[in-house]
Image 1 (spheres, rainbow, N blue to C red):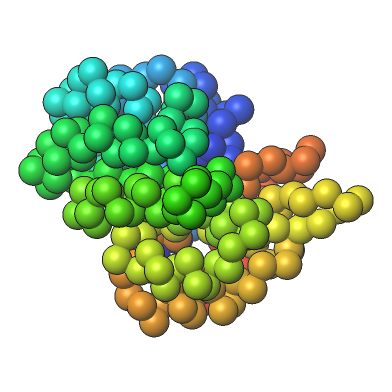
Image 2: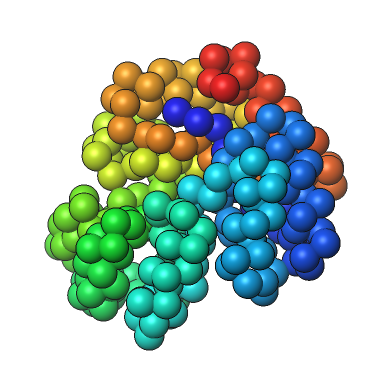
Length: 254
């Protein structure tokens, strides 16, 4: 499993071409070799690819506008071919689908795009938060419905360790359940500061990261450990990413 950086962590530093290029060089200098592109400014995909190539960073996952997946799936696929990116990510469930009753419609609406991506050698990945554990009248959660309606080859999951914990679910049990759907994992720690849950640099919170990492390693289905910290709480986000990578190196992940 290769450690990568989720650029959402440094979103304030990726909005212009100059800042994006500077930020990719900083990530590479830390020792990262791959990235997920999320929350970057409007730039041509060829520019993004060229900058990452120059820095020695593979682009392994994106967060892409889900509405464009519905209206222009061929264009989304072409962009990911330019990026040489295997995974096409939905970062957040569109608001109209955020209930157990509406999740079935989400599965119906996105099946065509998911099938097109699969035919093109890519895979749609869905990034969850905590809301996917909300249950409907039949006892099924939003996550249950998505898994029931879309098979693994059409829908993978970007498992997020922080949000599984925030939902009150067991991270390791969830990994086991999703073992064939999680080529990418958002690796986050959770700390408690002044009674508040916070995202934290890896090893500086309370999640059982060593246990989580060993389970992922044993299962062998995850390719990329994407380090993300939603909020750095006034710290330099690059410093947070650097400390997280140091933690992963100490755990044997290079």
